Length: 283
Image (cartoon, rainbow, N blue to C red):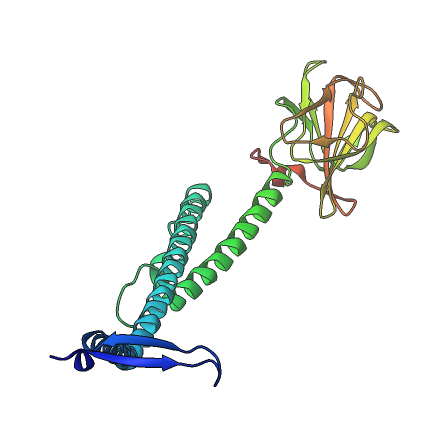
């Protein structure tokens, strides 16, 4: 093969009068360059076609990944709600047991009626609403029981001392005269402890004509108790007392013929028979 057929010659002249340059390229090099360029173009085209054809798959995968993340978050949120609801239901059951134990009720709250029933018709929201309903019921029952306990603790019960009853509530003969006696006189040895018969607030602690040294306790709702003839006063107005607290000692101060305790119960300042509040009954 001749030299002319083996090479391509390129002549480059920067100007018409200037020096020119000549370049020789083998056929094989030129063909190789063209083939490489065609290969790059073909590869780029194929790659572009692949990307375009798989773009939908890539988008679908990204969407699926996002939906999967959202479902996972919803699952975690649902598990958290279930855990909270379970804790609430357990708390309701504990409160119901406490109410049953403290109040003697067999069924403090209708838990089995509203909670714990499975089935396809039950939904989480329905169970949650039932739990809220039961919580309201339990709060109401607790409130009522607290009020009952407070009423019981502030209602006089029993007598302030254990002794011999010398005078009862009602009309009596005293010092040759007939008079109304608004309470009980209970004879005991001097110095015997005198106990409050209910929870309350001391509203009077001083000398009172006829009563001697006396203490008056307010139990709320217009109910008061009076204790008279004590040798000394150990409390001051404003002090809180509980049933069974010792408020003084039995004595014979005031209008008295011997050591005893005068005990009264009044409702809105109207004297009541203390025996109706006591386990002791008239014969």
